[in-house]
Length: 407
Picture 1: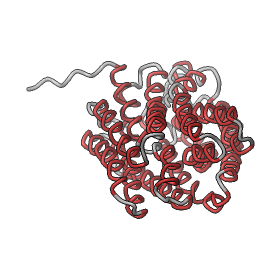
Picture 2 (picture 1 turned 120 degrees about the vertical axis):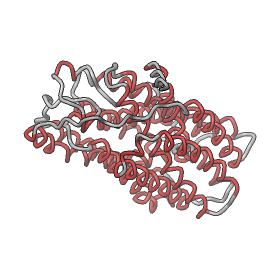
Picture 3 (picture 1 turned 90 degrees about the vertical axis):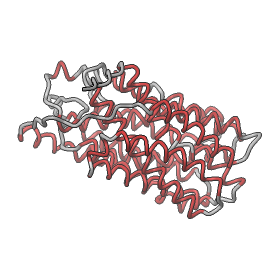
Picture 4 (picture 1 turned 60 degrees about the vertical axis):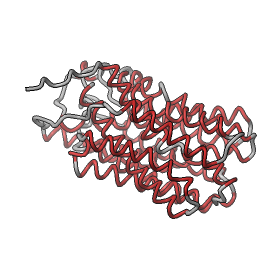
């Protein structure tokens, strides 16, 4: 019999997962943000059609997330991971081949589904293979999303003076291919051998707080995605052309260490309290460009948004796992995905007046999400500590759990 391949080092595993998340999320989903102004200016794309393309991508993301939930075998499949990475490389390469908004929508929908599958495979892999390692390791893997955003933003910024929107999409495809190659050997989660179940009393207690967490994370999906889609275009409306793309690069750079840092903070302070803080800071960052058109506001907005949007996901998913609610990660991700679909649709009527009203509404929604997080803090059962692994992880002592925060 052939001996099984040796497991990679934790750092190698983190690097491959980070590359997968950079390809699937940082480029696959968010490269549209810096390319959108180019498509407005040079491809005849209207603001409403731009919002519809964003919605198509988020619908695809929901489909992929639900597929991973309903068919857990997909999450453990290397073929699914590799097929999704190939699809993420092909869809941006096909964008310049047409001017049909319908075809663009279909391509963005496929890219969204592939992004979600890469995300769930990579996250499940991290939670399974690094569950006994320090929290900052998977946190740095999540930083791959920020690295992908920064790289795609730099790419568009460099191409902007010398090329058009077609070259931007083709370059994004090339960047995705490089990241996919780096992620190609990522080991998915292995099939579970047994599923210890928490006591019914603990589950009942956890259910009392999960509703508030779900509402908060759903509203975060609505609010954050408006900034995640339109921030570059909003900044570019009244600023030099380079500032919008430059701000998007700052979003990515600020996001790289954010999950690891929020995970470390979770060892000292309660996650519900940190979630409230992160959402409040994010709301301020989203509102800044709408309140003032200064360069400082644009750059400050980018840093605050980048430093919090991954942190919110880290804290929310870790809190759901701590509550030991069944399939908490999948349910929260599905709610978040629905919120992302609704976000562009909710603000679409406001876009005929520019992007500032849309950003203000998004900031208000995120503040309501913060209010739900404040409700979560009331009597939160901190003794229900657990790994981010969620449904199948056995309980651990509070002292041990404080040392293991999973993003």
